Length: 78
Image (cartoon, rainbow, N blue to C red):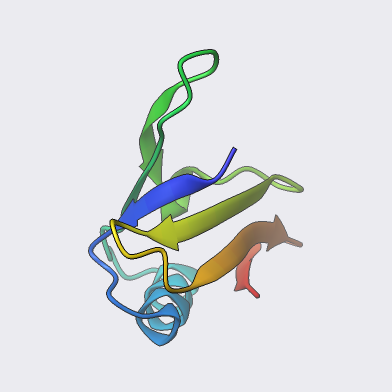
């Protein structure tokens, strides 16, 4: 399910926030899975686990999509 991301207006903002988390800075970017079957409301960039893939979009426009994953301990946004 595609998650809704908060605190990032553009994909570039999301990449910068992921870089900040990788550098140990406390950037707070939240995402929420609106699914009724497996809701996830505690999502932050720092909570993404190794090997986990999360697809996110901005709300309500859905003008961009990104995939967030953690590889070798680092967050990667593509």
